[in-house]
Length: 178
Image (cartoon, rainbow, N blue to C red; front, side, top):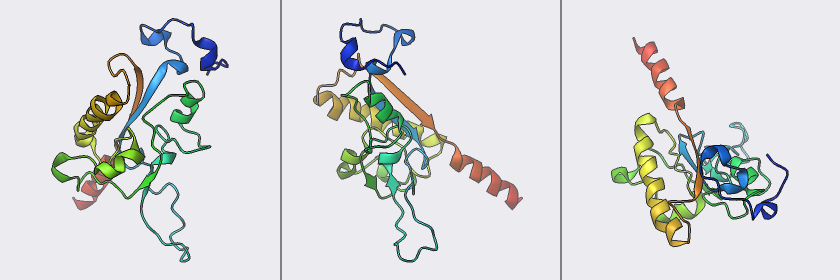
């Protein structure tokens, strides 16, 4: 990362292609994936710790890409050092949002959207579920984020896709069944 802050670069020309892009140019962070991207059980205690209730949850504020938790090492927070107004980060914990139980392809209940930002990951998701996650991000960008002043067409965005952990388990189980 460059050592200059975004305030030092106000007069720099806007990038016209990705080769000219700097961290301060990125305005939106988005992520797609499975339970790893959703940070499922990132703060879970030990299974044998009987003093702490074992409640599964997604600690999305800790997600490697879109986590916006205070004092956390995430891509979102590193970019925030250069672009104070970055958006799309996750700020809270939610009960697992399971790809298998999402109603009618609907992604999330509206009450969760304030916590997950543009981290569209679904626990248990497979590659086939990415279309649903992309639909959620497009809907949010063209709805809530556009309504709040984001220039959706011209803003620079960074997205990550990390998926496949559930597919590898399926292959292993399939081989054991033969």
